[in-house]
Every structure is written in structure tokens, then in C-alpha cells.
Length: 200
Image 1 (cartoon, rainbow, N blue to C red):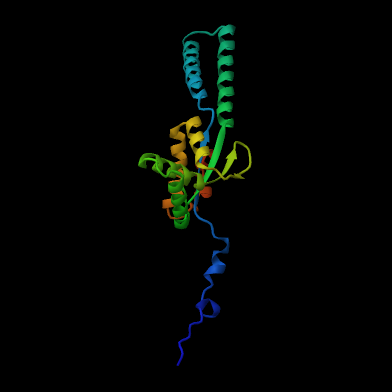
Image 2 (cartoon, helix red, strand yellow; image 1 turned 135 degrees about the horizontal axis):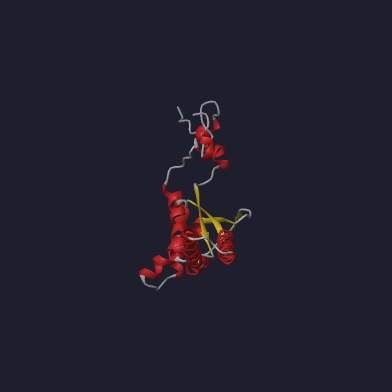
């Protein structure tokens, strides 16, 4: 008697069509925010100290109109710099890399860095892998936009906004890569602020 070698997916009554189920599947994603105007933080710190001194002086003695105007000017400058910093925000979206993609990136990286030392090869592979993981960005008050970056773009971003911020992007990728997908179903149901104290 011949063995029945018919694939199970051809028996919808008894099997499960995993190909159909995977049609709209996506690898896990994570996001983080970076800022291109981190340079204003130093000025914000200096202004904050000046504002605090002005307020302390005002609390100790009666303010003159000139001192009041100076404090208002400092506070306005502080707010303007806060707006500059916030407006420089970029949300970066990273996704997990599949095993096949990782092998492809590794092979291409080894080809591109043939003859280089291991340190440079590993660095290039890291940049290429992160570039592959970054799939979209969203500027402040903008729309999410798909991107396709390369190692040079990631390296330039690191050199421009700093290694610490790029580490945050790397961590977002690592979270997407290594964490089981889960969401906080109760997040929107938790009261906050004034509403939290009502009805008690």
C-alpha cells in the first residue's frame, strides 16, 4: 500500500495553512527618540541657574520693574530653547532582524571589509546591522516615513548627534530583537493627574 505523501496544508479540515496565517505577519519593532539640538542643553542649564538666582532674590526682597523684566526675558529665552530642543526630536523605529537577514548582512560585510582587521570588520558589521534594523523615522510633529539606510548613514548620525544617543537606537533594536512581544493592556485605563483623586 503506497504511503500518502500529500502535504497536510491541502487538508483544510484537519490541517492549518501557516502560509496564509503568515501573510500579514511582521517582525517585532521598538522605537526611541533622539535629538539633533542637544547643544542647547548647556545654555538651558545656565539659564536655569540665572532664573533660580533671580527668583531667590525676588523672594528675599521686593523686586523692581527692571528685575521683573529681566526675569521675564530669561524665562522667555528658556522657553524658546526648550521649543528648539523639542522641535529637533526624531523618533527612530527599529525592527528585529531575521536569521537569514543577519547571515546576508554578515556575508556582505565580510566582502566589503576583506583585508581589514577584525576590529574594523566587526564595527562595519555592527553599523550595517543597525542600518538594516532602522526601518522608519518620524520627525517632531511629522509623519512616520520609511527609510533605507546604510552603514555610512548610521556612522554619520553617530558622529553628529553623539554615541550616547545612538546607543539608545541600538538598545531599541536589541529590545525588538530579544524581547517576546507584549503590550500593556491596562496602560490607557490607569487614571492619572487630577482624575486619579476623584471618587475616593
